[in-house]
Image 1 (cartoon, rainbow, N blue to C red):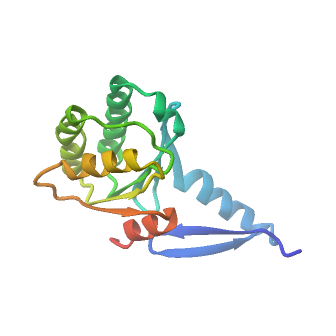
Image 2 (cartoon, rainbow, N blue to C red):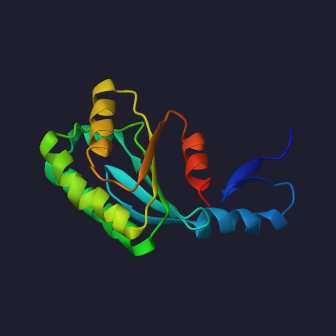
Length: 171
């Protein structure tokens, strides 16, 4: 059986790292533990920062089905704080497991308190993976599209790899 091989994105490029050579262990360790930093986590979302690609990544869980409006505001406030701190060029929202329905009031709140601050922090692209649940999908699309006068390009994907490739193509 061939040795395990890991694919690692660095900017626009994807590198394959074979574990057949022990010298590659430290390289893989670098990419896994140094390049990707965990910034925030609760039962609804895990937010990381990919230093090499200069993107923040939010991975939402199915627990979002039990979230309240206050939970929604809390995780978005933490997200915005991290965006302002690290100043990524892009944000990847992995919403494949996202179940929270964003009300019109929360969409309006987000236009000012989330996307307006994203733009000021230098985010120029947002990639969203599309959840399987139709109603959550529509709410997410309205949520992102609600931000008028945006300087941020957004795009929807069904594949996480394609979303990350699109984000990193801006380098």
